[in-house]
Length: 426
Image (cartoon, rainbow, N blue to C red):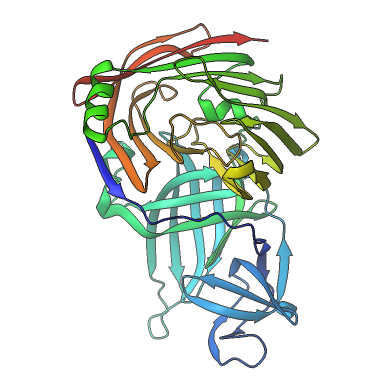
């Protein structure tokens, strides 16, 4: 089913982003003030607390965590460079949390592409009886470059039931519960720290840009085509007077041997060039030069790839279409494929899948955890979001590497579009 919702206008700004760093509190009962130095005390933080903060001047840092927000003196903070999350961090943990928790035991595991955190907080002994209370929790989420993004709280939790059957709206957290790989064998959230006691001993291979397109193996080149149903285009043309984001697509991707884009080109249904880019990579920097809709395009940015995510930071210039800041992250699930991914024309790798500002796809997987069986599409176009719910993926053909080469997408039982890709390998 297709539906449209109006979007608030978004404007690209060329102003500098304020640098942010990750901090661990080194003191106990440290004052948090409403503003640096002279602000009133609005709360306390201790060594179990950590957060992303930004410079507030005069040696102070501003921050926000669920329990308190404000400014804290840098004398009581240690700046930490986050590490990469990997399967080596799955296992058994001991930890601490905010009062009244005395200590925590936890297990971090994977299931159905998700990360599952099962933890039990043991409270301080009761003054009269000397007995300890305890509270158990189960969180489910997805990995990212530097940690885990927990989105659901499962209560009750049934280990024998599929996670998808337990992750309804009622289990969705009001705000995500994020953990960062802050130190060796330690995971930190705003209100707790967990230290690995015994790991599962598993290892991962860093991902590349090939993974952002659900490609496995040493892919060298992809020639891709998407053609929409004539009935769909005819209906939309009549409804909108031709003012819609759907059009047939023909693309070519060229990857380096380590899986990062070297070049990309796109033409329309009449073989008219729509865009082409050449990517020149250094150790961790990338420069892009090319054309889009006849206008010169260039970008320069850093690229950081871990085991479950890739992060980009830099700037782009699209000629008369403007320019701005690049700050973008992609994340894959524990199976190395995305549950959801958003492509935009002004964010690396600058690949579009429709004539729109943003293209967001959420995948649903079946028995094969690497090939989706359904998707939800959301396209930002003309101040609206065009949403196609529960589009079924059928008639999938694959090559010897397990990559799909042909598939058809249906909405409400009717053919929506067909896709084909011819894949060449190193």
